Image (tube, rainbow, N blue to C red; front, top):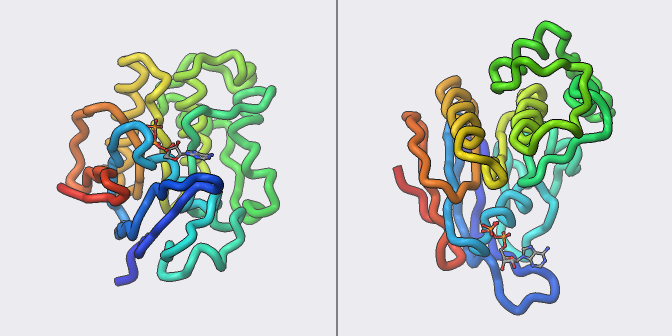
Length: 222
Ligand SMILES: Nc1ncnc2c1ncn2[C@@H]1O[C@H](COP(=O)(O)OP(=O)(O)OP(=O)(O)O)[C@@H](O)[C@H]1O
């Protein structure tokens, strides 16, 4: 079986830097895997996610999505299937509904049908956002609420792989707990997730793997 994502021999150095972030890194992600990437600050956790969705390009090595080099897939197309949620959520100065539906206005998602109000309301509840109106301003939400909204917006696109960059960094313990329980639930539903975290969280999923980024490489363990 071809893995969902396969990284081989990956080496990367930021422009104008003399130190490489990765040196011959390998990673294989099968459908349904839930990988929590840990590592000290500066070990390259965000950089790894950025390379996967082609926000940066490696100097060496390959990243294959379903066996195809990501360099041959237009970034917008790639990011339709591999959804990246950045550390700091970005919301437009618009309502919650408009923010959630924004990706469906992109040409690349033209064949995806936008969710109706019922689905959006249901999802708000599932993402611990019940009580909010779809017609209120997204910018007036707390960081934790915006983060859950960004997470929900990504899931509405039904990506093959969800990449979450430090989804709980700006959150209090209670909001972080909600994000982790959401990730656990999605993993139990069979979603494939790579999430970067600093926290020592108790997540239970039969498909959970912990990846430690250390010495420019990633070591996975059960
Ligand atoms: N845009 C950039 N330009 C140059 N160097 C960068 C850039 N972004 C990150 N780096 C460097 O790359 C290395 C890895 O950074 P990265 O942000 O991936 O680490 P991280 O493990 O995600 O850190 P943190 O846990 O603090 O978020 C660091 O040495 C950092 O200084």
